[in-house]
Length: 165
Ligand code: SF4
Ligand code: SF4
Image 1: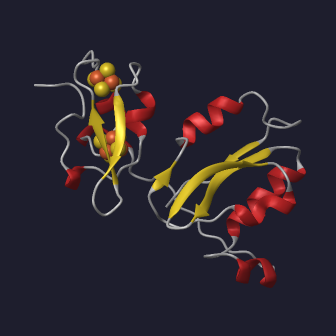
Image 2: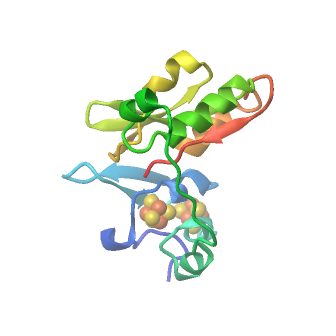
Image 3: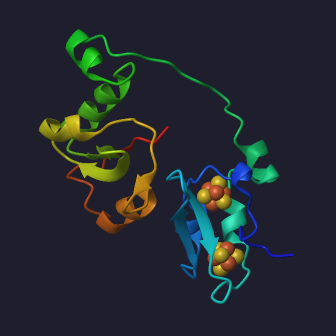
């Protein structure tokens, strides 16, 4: 039996990209199906069966046990204008503004038609580009986006990563 996600069924995959990002051989490609949702395809000729992709997969039983939230918080933006401009409660804008004012940077999603892409934002004037829509991911994977610009995370090294829902 393979130690990779090569035989993963669609019902057991949310297309999170984690397996592709962790693969030391770069032999996982995310391929879109007919509805535009991306699933991993393993190049078995390059795979060394190290098991790293399965270890990070949130659908593995062991990882589901680890991911039970211990605490949950809820918040919303008290500034009515910022709240109305947001797709939900506007809390992300509050946190993002704080990080940028500290000289840090924020990573999050921006919409491109029916797709989204992860981008880096380091100015308050560009915060409007970040959205929280759920859609298939395009371009750079989130962790690679951060890694490729490291260590230039602004003067304070403060960093906020807004996860796609
Ligand atoms: S088992 Fe290792 S080499 Fe093979 S696809 Fe998974 S992470 Fe890549
Ligand atoms: S890590 Fe698991 S859930 Fe995420 S894309 Fe790979 S197989 Fe799918």
